[in-house]
Length: 118
Image 1 (cartoon, one colour):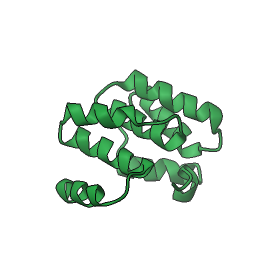
Image 2: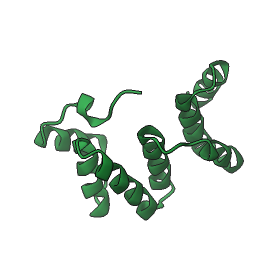
Image 3: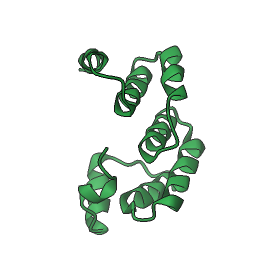
Image 4: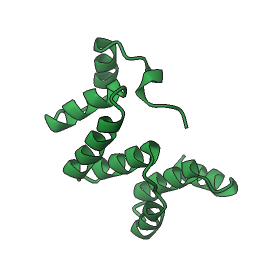
Protein backbone atom coordinates (compact mmCIF):
# COMPACT_ATOMS: atom_id res chain seq x y z
CA UNK A 1 0.00 0.00 0.00
CA UNK A 2 2.78 2.47 0.89
CA UNK A 3 4.80 1.66 -2.22
CA UNK A 4 1.69 2.19 -4.34
CA UNK A 5 1.11 5.55 -2.65
CA UNK A 6 4.69 6.56 -3.39
CA UNK A 7 4.41 5.50 -7.04
CA UNK A 8 1.13 7.37 -7.49
CA UNK A 9 2.53 10.46 -5.80
CA UNK A 10 5.62 10.62 -8.01
CA UNK A 11 3.34 10.75 -11.07
CA UNK A 12 1.56 13.88 -9.86
CA UNK A 13 2.69 17.48 -9.99
CA UNK A 14 4.79 18.93 -7.19
CA UNK A 15 2.62 20.42 -4.47
CA UNK A 16 2.53 21.01 -0.71
CA UNK A 17 0.28 17.97 -0.31
CA UNK A 18 2.69 15.79 -2.30
CA UNK A 19 5.58 16.97 -0.13
CA UNK A 20 3.68 16.07 3.06
CA UNK A 21 2.77 12.66 1.69
CA UNK A 22 6.35 11.94 0.65
CA UNK A 23 7.55 13.20 4.05
CA UNK A 24 5.35 10.63 5.79
CA UNK A 25 6.24 7.85 3.37
CA UNK A 26 9.94 8.54 3.92
CA UNK A 27 9.37 8.07 7.64
CA UNK A 28 7.46 4.84 6.99
CA UNK A 29 10.31 3.54 4.79
CA UNK A 30 12.96 4.64 7.33
CA UNK A 31 14.68 6.70 4.63
CA UNK A 32 16.33 9.41 6.69
CA UNK A 33 17.91 11.13 3.70
CA UNK A 34 14.58 11.55 1.89
CA UNK A 35 12.85 12.47 5.14
CA UNK A 36 15.23 15.38 5.67
CA UNK A 37 14.88 16.42 2.05
CA UNK A 38 11.09 16.68 2.34
CA UNK A 39 11.42 18.25 5.79
CA UNK A 40 13.35 21.14 4.22
CA UNK A 41 10.39 21.86 1.95
CA UNK A 42 7.86 22.20 4.78
CA UNK A 43 6.53 25.70 5.26
CA UNK A 44 5.04 27.59 8.17
CA UNK A 45 1.46 26.71 7.27
CA UNK A 46 -0.93 24.77 9.49
CA UNK A 47 -1.01 21.60 7.39
CA UNK A 48 2.78 21.37 7.13
CA UNK A 49 3.28 22.10 10.81
CA UNK A 50 0.76 19.44 11.85
CA UNK A 51 2.48 17.00 9.52
CA UNK A 52 5.82 17.80 11.15
CA UNK A 53 4.32 17.41 14.62
CA UNK A 54 2.91 14.00 13.74
CA UNK A 55 6.32 12.79 12.55
CA UNK A 56 7.89 14.08 15.78
CA UNK A 57 5.26 12.15 17.72
CA UNK A 58 5.84 8.96 15.70
CA UNK A 59 9.58 9.26 16.35
CA UNK A 60 8.90 9.63 20.11
CA UNK A 61 9.93 13.30 20.10
CA UNK A 62 6.91 14.15 22.20
CA UNK A 63 7.96 17.56 23.47
CA UNK A 64 8.71 18.82 19.94
CA UNK A 65 5.28 17.59 18.82
CA UNK A 66 3.53 19.21 21.77
CA UNK A 67 5.32 22.51 21.16
CA UNK A 68 4.13 22.58 17.55
CA UNK A 69 0.57 21.59 18.51
CA UNK A 70 0.45 24.34 21.13
CA UNK A 71 1.76 26.95 18.70
CA UNK A 72 -0.86 25.94 16.13
CA UNK A 73 -3.55 26.11 18.82
CA UNK A 74 -2.52 29.62 19.84
CA UNK A 75 -3.19 30.76 16.29
CA UNK A 76 -6.25 28.55 15.70
CA UNK A 77 -8.31 28.24 18.85
CA UNK A 78 -11.24 26.81 16.88
CA UNK A 79 -9.34 23.53 16.33
CA UNK A 80 -11.14 21.87 19.23
CA UNK A 81 -10.10 18.32 18.34
CA UNK A 82 -6.45 19.36 18.41
CA UNK A 83 -6.97 20.79 21.89
CA UNK A 84 -8.30 17.43 23.09
CA UNK A 85 -5.42 15.62 21.40
CA UNK A 86 -2.80 17.84 23.07
CA UNK A 87 -4.45 17.28 26.44
CA UNK A 88 -4.15 13.53 25.95
CA UNK A 89 -0.58 13.68 24.68
CA UNK A 90 0.59 15.87 27.55
CA UNK A 91 -0.91 13.47 30.07
CA UNK A 92 0.84 10.54 28.33
CA UNK A 93 -2.47 8.96 27.36
CA UNK A 94 -2.38 6.50 24.52
CA UNK A 95 -4.83 7.64 21.89
CA UNK A 96 -6.44 4.92 19.82
CA UNK A 97 -9.00 5.45 17.11
CA UNK A 98 -11.79 4.48 19.48
CA UNK A 99 -10.50 6.94 22.11
CA UNK A 100 -10.34 9.70 19.52
CA UNK A 101 -13.92 9.02 18.38
CA UNK A 102 -15.08 8.96 22.00
CA UNK A 103 -13.37 12.28 22.77
CA UNK A 104 -14.79 13.89 19.66
CA UNK A 105 -18.23 12.66 20.67
CA UNK A 106 -17.89 14.03 24.22
CA UNK A 107 -16.84 17.43 22.92
CA UNK A 108 -19.49 17.27 20.18
CA UNK A 109 -16.91 17.83 17.47
CA UNK A 110 -17.62 16.60 13.99
CA UNK A 111 -14.64 15.34 11.95
CA UNK A 112 -15.17 18.28 9.60
CA UNK A 113 -14.39 20.72 12.43
CA UNK A 114 -11.03 19.11 13.16
CA UNK A 115 -9.00 20.79 10.42
CA UNK A 116 -9.69 22.86 7.36
CA UNK A 117 -9.46 20.97 4.09
CA UNK A 118 -6.34 21.41 1.96
